[in-house]
Length: 152
Image (cartoon, rainbow, N blue to C red; front, side):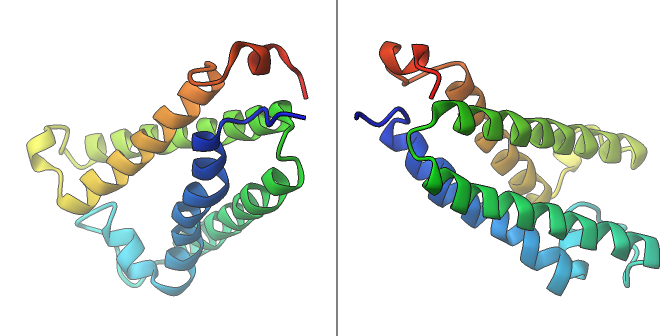
């Protein structure tokens, strides 16, 4: 049986994306100051209890996502439907993260791109990059016609 997920997407979603996701586990848990400062130059350090709870919840989400990316995608390597549902779910999170960045910049009066710091640009560019790859996959870009029609 031919693989339904093209090699580029297979490598990206099952190997590269989990590495990116892993930073979302480690930083909120073990380096919350660095993590928070990467989103706001005025981050409250040390984080308040409610912020710490949100960071721990975020790390839990990233852990679940990591396990799905590493485990589920390898367990169902030819199930295009599983791959699409997972990427659609994570794309919702990517879009939500980008909206959160925009909301934060607006609240800080930093809507001009020239006011963004290097770490903020890095966060946004990585998120836009992975969201673009997810969107292309979901639109069937690079997926052969016979694979697009297959439903797992």
